[in-house]
Image (cartoon, rainbow, N blue to C red; front, side, top):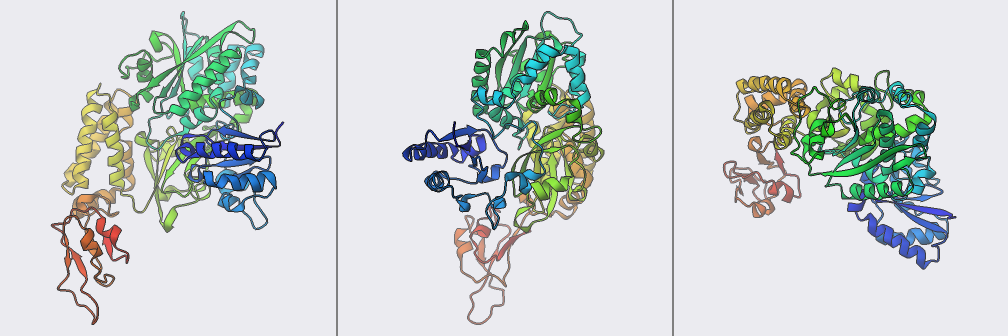
Length: 603
């Protein structure tokens, strides 16, 4: 029995910042002080506040240490673990008070969150099945196998109001219900862990921090629809998630929680992994199943839907990682408990990956219907550097931009759809006044063009023509007729593409046209980028009143485009200021980065 536990984040974000070295330093320092029988070091998954990584939490007092380096460990061990004195300089800033420290639950980042899908992430060792079982793990599976019929299980999921968290928001219970009556010698339960949206890492964090929750939920789904085989499709670029899934599957088989005759009930269910190569289109259910079959990942026409003819031509269901992570808790705590959170039509919680121009980047889980302002200003900590909030992109390449005028909108399926946006899988990229919305639309469309499988003409050709027009606009070569063509193309691609990749590809363009059309017009008519982002429309200028003639910018210019401004008036004893020769400037920004006096600006 240990008196203290040191939890070190072992998620991808903290690992990339050196958390494994921190863990090793703790193990070494604890052993040096003879505390190895009193203090345990536990590698966990992501705790959410990625901005503060590497994260270390010391229990039982739950002290949250932020941005810990290996060199800090000896001090924590000697002061905190030996003498009981918290090392305040390393405590997360918002958890500090004049009298000491406050709990994480009282900080802005965590106080508005309700962790259901993320309940074990950052709390348990994801590579130890006993820790998962110790938090109630596999009790839900035992309950459904010994106390419930498959139809009762489906009804609970229906009553909970859980909708698919992968982007479409289709009712999970209804998907299972449609599959159950279809007779076949084999049925399949599939899990989408591919997660290809730029800026999204919700599913990765669940797989890294609580893999057994997904395995348990898939087994429950298998019982509900009459399947004995599951497949988890996870991208190969998630090496930590893949390794922990392998460990979890092995442990579950050893404990008899996967395989034959689970809980002695005669129910058989096993799970295998399939690795994806990073194709965004394989997030679409039929393309994913085609890829599992070993074929090129291309979508298939629907109907027939996977519930009738899916993986290997057999009835199948597919849900994403976050959807499955909710299932065990719904079974244990009841449909009413889950439905009590969120809104009338959008029940429960939703995990978002908060990134971009925001103080607190990381993973958050909030009740559906939480106002966007709460996410941006309270949980996210607001926009850094005194900048103004401009917009937030939800749903990645399939989503839309929510402008600042809607900062009080409740974040749920219906409210976002009412303004032409979507919740999507959960990526939430925040933008400030320095972002060009035309450039943002272009960025997401470039991604979609690269990721199109090319099967249907509307997507393969249409998105590329859209990108060509956007490029003309950002290069200052477009006309208002091009803007009209762009809108027409958006609607054509949206209405004629085979799968959701093409059908949603125009969303970033349509939403920015709807809310930021003035920026498009400025690019076309005025040949100016209001945010000063689009290189072809940008000029660097030197303010003669601030320039002291130090030559630093001229020396650093690779194009020799900065000369003395001989025509400028100069006060006695001062040097002549410099100027940028526009025709010779390559717009690299080296001059602005070099100037220490703020004399160089772009417009």
